[in-house]
Length: 181
Image (tube, rainbow, N blue to C red; front, side, top):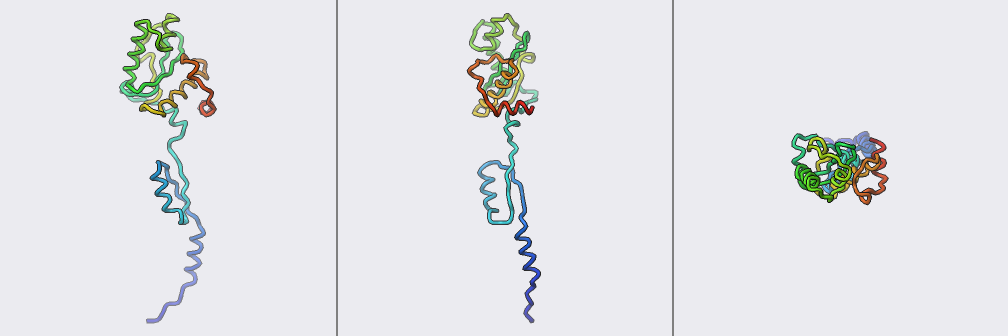
């Protein structure tokens, strides 16, 4: 058997393919993504990350579920007489929280700013479908606090809030998001 001649054209093709860098985008979901992309570190594949959890999406997501009052999250109570709004959060279901506000109103208890406003101004207390709006379904935790703060900021920017003034803080990120909505 005769030895084969080396093919010099193959060498130049492999050099060209090494110089061309390929790109593949990964959706970042945590440390698992970092682990997987480290495998490609010494290859000619460049891997940028992207995310589906943008701050705007997290803060402005709205729930349209039929059973929305059986979930927890951030809600807005609107006075049926003047339209002023109170933004709150609950780790329990919205129906339970609504009943607590209703009980405070019925027994002339000033333990919430919403109830206090209704009593002091002689307003009525409407049905759950008329006064409560589910802003976002969310489990209890830091995300819930941030989402509540964003919606309080939103109502305060429109001068339409009933929340305590100490709950309203200047937040440039919230302000920027509101400008783009």
